[in-house]
Length: 318
Ligand code: SD4
Image 1 (cartoon, rainbow, N blue to C red):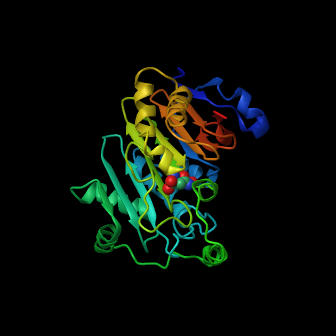
Image 2 (cartoon, rainbow, N blue to C red):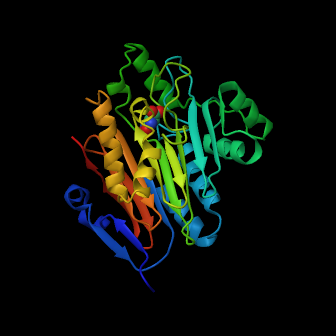
């Protein structure tokens, strides 16, 4: 079979410590199997999406949604869904969005008491005339569409919150320090692209704060003719540069996914005070090349394809 997909990645066997210097290499694969790429170490989610795409090649959104749902349900993930760390009033609020290969998009932000924010975002996309619903309106919409109210504060998150309350300091550097937000992009065997992003946002944020993750063009952007990108890190940096829209536009102009991500990170660095702060971008183009870039060392992302699943470390600015 003729190779039609190229990757900016290396095999897991090489070990994370080696990756930074070599992950700009492109390695050709000999197939047109699905490709799933996500922020951070989200091997389980990637596996779920990949397996679903093998089983049902046309069900791209179902594959993405079930993968992201698995993270939203995982109480050990302190940045997404149930178990996410709360705002400074002790309440968890979620931001999520989804975008498909037909340029449909749906989004919810400041959503409380509902576990599967990405599924509500999909309902907004498919069953409302709108793109984005916020706060109480988003919750009412979810309840009307069969979602159930859940106490989102896990024991572990409550414990962490009570500890934080003893010295309740907020700073973007400290509260934006730990990240696990899932942004997940997938290409099916027909080379269609879609993606989703889901997060509980910054820990101990001001109630009502919304980050980049539910904003189309900031936390996620898909242009099926060109490619897709998603973001993680400090939303306040990302949303002022429309970073994922920028990445996709740069791929349209011919940049590789990694170079497009790099361009968008440099835009953040040139325009804002980035010291001590992290932002990471991942992207895939229509040829199936994958790339990533971050402000700081330590941004990892996960790729699943016919060669298996591996966690890679991105190149970075600092
Ligand atoms: C936000 N970008 O709300 C999200 C945070 C994040 O892993 O990515 N955490 O700003």
